[in-house]
Amino acid sequence: MATFMNVSTLSTVFASALLSSESLPELVKLNSVRLAEAYNTLTSFFDRYGIYYIPCHAGHFMLAKLAPQASSWDDEAALIIRLGEAGVLVSPGQAYHVVEKGWARVSFAVERATLKEAIRRMKDHVK
Image 1 (cartoon, rainbow, N blue to C red):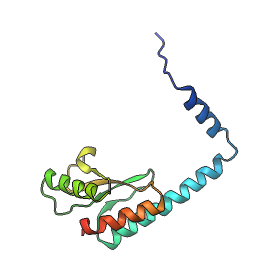
Image 2 (image 1 turned 180 degrees about the vertical axis):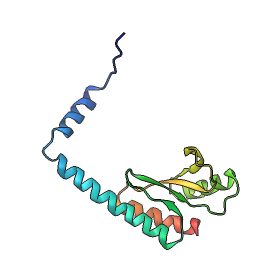
Image 3 (image 1 turned 45 degrees about the vertical axis):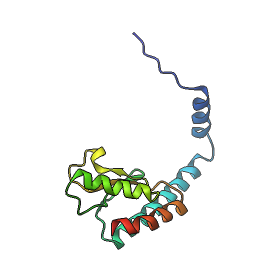
Image 4 (image 1 turned 90 degrees about the vertical axis):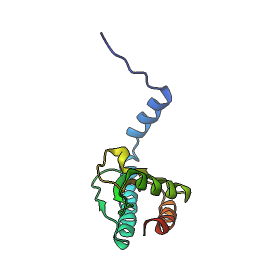
């Protein structure tokens, strides 16, 4: 028995246009440069404040121990909530099967100004 997957026409047209575009190599290069800059900005912040993190070699997010004093999942969740209230959305490490408490998944694939503002807001909560 054959299995079929329905893909929207709009998605197919977009993907085809992107993948056949003469601009694709430049778009990939620009994306790589911007992701590298954002990664360096975030890791510089982590290094400056002594925040342990797992380096990322591919992808657009990383795990960082934003709540090093967390002794329970509730402590981890409390930091995630405080950051959310400050307008910084990160995900708890527990959601990604991290067994040690206090970790969060942090995306750096955002515009430079947005990342800088997020870092500014995080400073008061992760010291």
